[in-house]
Image 1 (cartoon, rainbow, N blue to C red):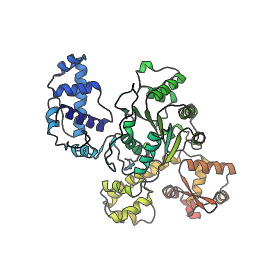
Image 2: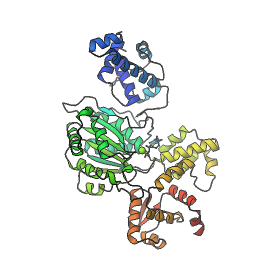
Image 3: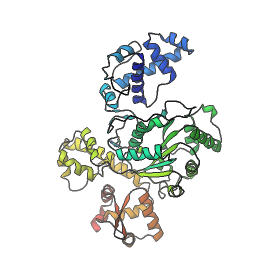
Image 4: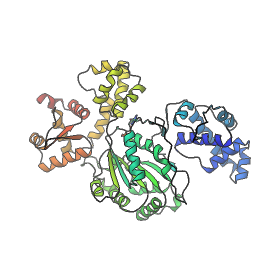
Length: 473
Ligand SMILES: Nc1ncnc2c1ncn2[C@@H]1O[C@H](COP(=O)(O)OP(=O)(O)O)[C@@H](O)[C@H]1O
Ligand SMILES: [Mg+2]
């Protein structure tokens, strides 16, 4: 491998580890090191202070060491990389393929934000960059979970790619119940479509930040903090200017945390009511960027925005299906012929399956058949706590409606439900609508009738919380 090859491989590894491209000075340090230069020589030649160059170097060796699972220092860098037996005679790429990264790194098969379980190796489309934008995308994943896996999901990834890259949607909503894999999917999507963007920014709203804070955080990716205006209107205008100038993918995760607990789904907290206005402007104004809004509760304003055909789409993420077997494999469970049953019981929800698999491993030595001997659906304590947090967000009317479903073993129509409840008609209808937006209730169509049913995992949770209702029925 020559200097350029080594640089490219180091760059791929750093990207796999951090989700970020190498900066100019980092490349200079690597190049200088390969050419046998000392830190003072690199610093002098490139007009930086010695200490700054040293710091950049130390950080790089640290990142490369953890990516490779082997200690890399300035003096060992060249020899470590030369000794990597990389099958480098590939036709069209000098970079590590995901599988190679997994082979080289002696760690878990998920390398930070880059998922290596691709369904097939892709050759990314050439970057479309405007003349005044960087040639490599600037990717900021500081806010994203460091480790995740994402098996399967080819159809969903292709749909999102189509909407975002080809159709140039300005807002895409990714909706799904907690634990279904929204965050994992979005991070996997970045890997698939990054070459089409100048900037990719992931930000979570899990601490319910004000719109001002979110705008400031976003603007920091484009310029110096001192250049960020004070007024919220000017912040929005400046962001819109960047969204027009560059093609950006901005992922805002956990949008449901902007909504009020104890109120119907999708009602913004009082201090956060300017978000829907902001989203409306993003949808309506011409620009070449996309906001991917990830949420466990449907955004109310979406119906209006979609009606206006503002390049707004929504994808509801369902269970993982039998691809979830890969998750069970990680937990070394036995009785593979029973796995499909287990997956169906827990609705193919990756988080619910992970929690349950942990319990099976712990209490049944991984024996799935023994676990399935239990007649009722088992809700482990971790899952109970997760559902409890969602339950606390519901209105008292929604809770009353759901409790009625506890004793039902068949789907019901709205009039049937109304007969069982002492609720005003509008409370019943708004409650059911809200529960649909939270994906607690599913509907089925039987001839002309629309029937509603509760997700069986939530139903079992409620049965355990309200044993008296089940006894009465
Ligand atoms: N496609 C997938 N393959 C494997 N594991 C997954 C997949 N999707 C999600 N997971 C795992 O399930 C858990 C929940 O996923 P996450 O993306 O955080 O869900 P959400 O954002 O919808 O709440 C995580 O541990 C994640 O690694
Ligand atoms: Mg998430």
